[in-house]
Amino acid sequence: KSIRAFAPATVANVSCGFDILGFAIDELGDQVEVSLRETPGLEVIHIAGDNGKLPYESEKNTCTVAIQAMLQALNYQGGMEISLYKGLPLGSGMGSSAASAAAALVAANALLGYPFDKKSLVNFAVEAERIACGAAHADNVAPSLLGGFVLIRDYHPLDVIKLPVPKGLFCTLLHPHLELNTADSRSVLRKQISLKDATIQSGNIAGLISGLYQADFGLISRSLKDVIAEPTRALLIPGFYELREAIQSIGALGSGISGSGPTIFVLSPSRKIAGEVEKIGRKVYQKVGLEVDIYISEIN
Ligand code: HSE
Image 1 (cartoon, rainbow, N blue to C red):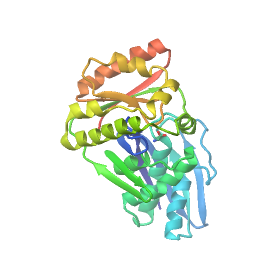
Image 2: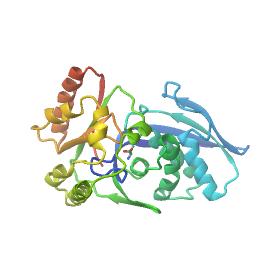
Image 3: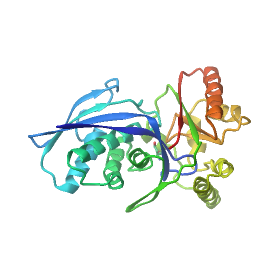
Image 4: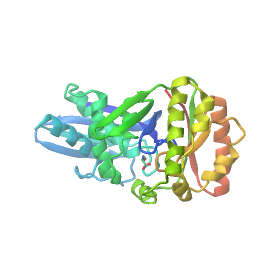
């Protein structure tokens, strides 16, 4: 018996929510097929769509690391075989490693008769992130598993909260062909922040979450600011400020780095404006001299 599951791409941080906020992009993602086998242990038997870049070793692959954490909690002694079908580019800031881990957990959990609910699976998925980038952050895996906007209120223990999504909120994702490794883009972060920046960031994250609850696009727009990660990370992302400036007056709500980049997300209050962002984005990246893939999706 085998089960195949899909898990979506995600935008982590959402500007002011460094490591604590993310949302899912339903149309894009990875698929993982898991089957039971008689011999114990986990084995990755097939990986497609990664250009040969992902490891098959079970202690390095995010699918097997996540499933292993789950099997340990169950004290399960059996074995499984795993096939990974990548739909997401690596090192893109679209939650690629997280989607693989999430899809693997959903498939393995189903195969075992659903011993865990989806929220509990987040605990296992963060172990995969620890392997993938050195930090067990949950702001990709949680929305990949739960969908929509998800807040990670705390990590010890994990306290994961699903947030409401206002109707008619669109995301344009602009993925330049450039790989940025999350571990590297975490290493450029400042380790200390000032009281002033902490206050600004808290105001914005509170504003963004209030904006989601009140379906207030103006408040969401005013809150899409990041004084913690963006100032240093934006330097690694060609076209970041050019795009922000170019879309300033078309009615988009705001832009930011998707996860640790180089993908940029732009939120818009309509599909029409999200489409304008795409057109402007193509011009900006042409000037910058980078190829770009652009996706538009309604957040659900
Ligand atoms: N919150 C993580 C980071 C997301 O910003 O490093 C990585 O995609």
